[in-house]
Image (tube, rainbow, N blue to C red; front, side):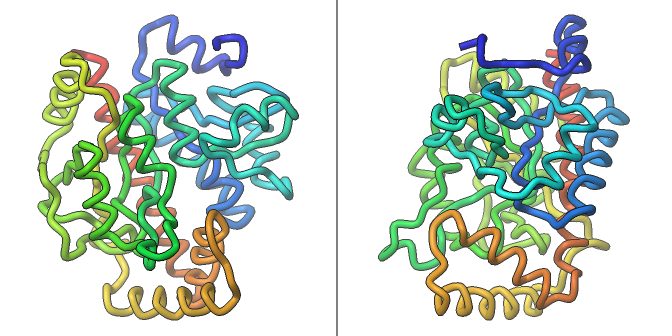
Length: 303
């Protein structure tokens, strides 16, 4: 297993010194944002994690290896390269065997972080149950991964292009704790709130760290969602963004876009329809998650 892992010097040093480490995905770089904002954001998010006392480990597949921590050149390559594979659980073995460039989704990043014994992972938003999934069965592999892999995911809730109610039902069935960080309702990515309550609330990082230790010390496997709302000043107006999402969904359906192609299509379409405002919100919420995620990692490391 370990023969497939390759660590950056910064991560290697952090591990040797017992420093807190935060995993970061690479799909947000290659599929989530356009160049050059993607690379700029990735670098800024890594720096925010350092500034808050932890060490960033951006994860990706390169040349038959799982890279735990990317160099500046590797970040640039991912931001610029065309045809980078979007990696979920089912793809990892094949992409390693064929030595393709692979950008890890939430599910794949959780698997790789777990292999490297990294327990805290910061992202934008999780995947979930897509609208209309009762007929299409379009459900993100992120949810299954959360059910079985011991990694906490700090995110701004579920992407509002999803069926948030069904996503929460699925997570409840799988026994995944959904913790509202300073909130009683699940944030909806671009907005601070949805109509759906979370089942747990934490108002400080020590509560989150204690919960994670208790859960895993008891042998209760699986991850946890720490849902951290976008800041008030960065949030989008709910009725405005929901109207845009409805329009984009209709277009996706009309064009026969399905499966893993839905999210990148939707994010691009929403960006166009909001004249770039959704991208600004996306960048802001990832940075906000990086602050809280790093602080949780520091608290978790102390216990």
